[in-house]
Structures are given as structure tokens and as C-alpha cells.
Length: 301
Image 1 (cartoon, rainbow, N blue to C red):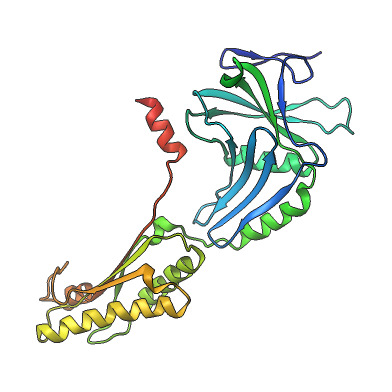
Image 2: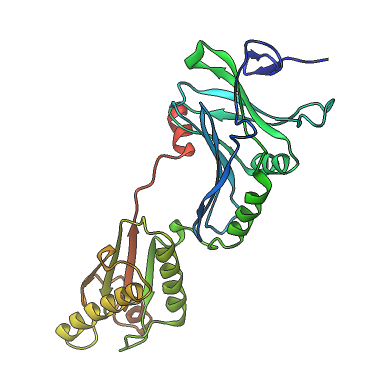
């Protein structure tokens, strides 16, 4: 016996019934592509003819993160709750569809499935099932709509996606966007910890050509004459830039400035304070699009 699926007080008819708009790739249309394969992002994309596209995405970071983005050709016209279901393959007649999750679609934002529900979608696709989104379409007078993700051609590209995820950097942009490097006394040599941080930043810069600007500011303690300290701070900043450019980073993306004894952050009366003042500060800037967290904040106002 078939049952109606209720979504936030709206009744959606089963997909087998008439009057439901269905979007999904046919056997000859179903294509999966690994469109991003880098140490900072893995993106496995699938086109949904006439509707838009979907993509499994994972980013560099300390924590496991993977989600599914559903990008329509037309923006979401309203906030609504959407049912995510798994439909059985045609060669397994008699198997009932199952629920995966219920997610929130925000106005003007892409749909998003995160956490365990996104991994469940991957498992269902690998098993030949069809994850589907059921909701009411504002653009079609609130008619019931099913947007399906085809499993045809999924498995081979999925293995490449998993391999990409294994190569993601274990830190994110936020982890290194502002970094302070410290130096040995009267030296151009970084402390061992700062050497490791610099290597992390360089690896990220190489992998992300979209970073807008890298600012490198050099500082010294107040020991010795001020002019040699000014030259030393400038030299330290430029040595960091050279480290980046030697690894292939475009020199136009890196700006340096030496500040000498200016802008101390600790006392110069102690060795610990002077060590803190001998530093290079690296700050990186990038434009980031609005996130679903931003959407939730907007919706709650």
C-alpha cells in the first residue's frame, strides 16, 4: 500500500502518480565528473537535465566534512522543508523506497545535505539506488516535484572522489589565514615551529590559485640600531615571499613590507618578549560566497 509523504504540512504525491514533475538524467544522459581534484577541494558533479546539477563536495580541514549541494537553474523562491528519499532500481521490483533525511531549503541559496545523510546518499548510489528530493515547486504553482540523482556511471568516478578525499590537506584556510612566524635571535632563520607553519601555508597557496592577496609584514625587536633593524625586517619579509615564489606562487599575489622596531607586541626588556617581537605576520585574503549558515541567520531575523 502506498502512502502519501507529508512535508511541513504539504502533501506530496508518490512519484508513481500523475501530476508530479520529475527531473532526472536518463540512461544515456547520466554523467558523473570529478570537476575538482585538489588538496583543498574534491567535487563530484552530476547534471540534472532541465533542473540544474548536484555535487558531492569535501574540503581541506581538520574534521571530516562532506556534503551534497543541489544547485537549481533558478534560485530557491522560498524557505521550505524537503524530503530526501532513496528509490530502488528498476531491476529490483518490489523493494520499497526509504527515507534518508529531511532538509531545509533556504530562499536564494542552494539546497544542501550534510553529515551522515550525505554519506547515506553515496551508499545508496553505490548500491544502484536513486536519491531523490521531493518538494513543492513555487515556479510551477506549487506542483509536487521529484528531483532525482542517477546512479548510472557513478561507481567508477566515485572511487576517484574517495582517492581525492584521501589527499585533502588536514587544515583549512581559516587555520592559516593569519599566522605569526618567529625567528631565532639575530638571525634570518625561523624557529622550527614557524618553519612547519610556513610549509603548511606554502602547500595551501600552491593548491589554491584563487587566493586574492598574501600580505607579509616583517618586524624586529629593539636590540641594536634602528636602521639595521628596519633592513632586517624587510629582508625577513622578502625571504618569506621568495620561499613562496620558488614553489611556483605568482609573485604578484604576495606583498611585503618591513616595519623594523615598530608595533611591538611584547616588552623588549626580556628575552621572551624580544623573541615574540622578532616576527613575520602572514595574512591572506579571499572572497567567500555566502554560506547556508548565513542563510539560517537571515531566516531567523
